[in-house]
Image 1: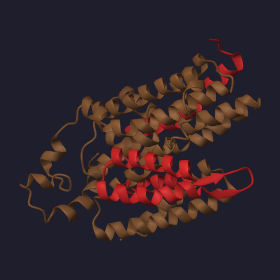
Image 2: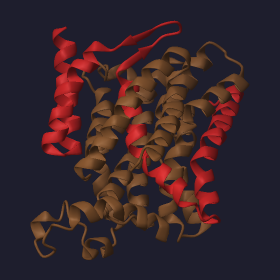
Image 3: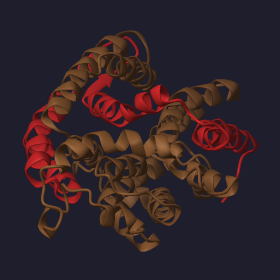
Image 4: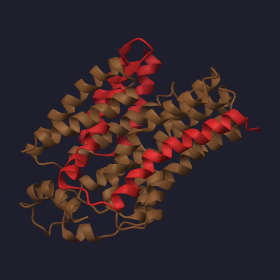
Length: 107
Length: 266
């Protein structure tokens, strides 16, 4: 139950650099009327960033190589079908986890 | 605020016009004024956050286990999840602490890994301008990929966002993250490997579902535009991941393709 000085410094420093990008837009946007082109640009962010996060989770990046996580890709296809069919966050997540567990168990 | 609504209404107008406003079973697709006026509560926010909890719990347990394995005390793991509150970054911090990386390098890496939060917050912030600075900061501090995804889904459905709903969503996630991290750090050695159980895949499943929910409300012409952009995203991610860290690739690819989206919009 101890806190090391170095660890504490790292936690505080990392907390600050994480908080700044999280909070800054909320402070700036309040005092600023964003032009329509910027709002239009922002409307594309959700689809773009969610696509990026899906792709990122299907890749394995090592120091000097980039690999495709084939297990994750195999499970991704039925997960996508289930998401489209059910439109349900809970069902998709639970089905995805079960399928991944099965794939890891058998392969 | 008016500008935001004007933009939101574009896809809405197309898909909504043909519908009969009085039919209640089409509420999912239809954005009537009544739908917009219902103010969601804190409890609604908590409920909307529940499907994302499996992701937080599995990754949080894993982050706690990794923390303990990296010789961090339970207090340190708890403090980190309380203050840093970021999945990928916490794993990286632990890994770098173990090999005695200089503090400045750990902080710089964390900054880059979490920089995408700027894009998430910038997208949500215009919907909360009517609240006080303090309230805005409170919301912004707790925005995560998942809570952003759920909130953006709500925007895509044409429903209104408010502070109580967002706080319900954010605090549910925050509490479950901290508890999971601490439990992982305390009982890590007794818990079965969450990865073997496929639980790490909860995150991918969640992003896939959030993405589908984003696209589910678009008119077909708009949908084609988005699908093209998604192809560009995949290409950009693959190419950029060859040269920069995947976290940086997420930011650069998103900025580039969102710009292409605006330029090629009809």
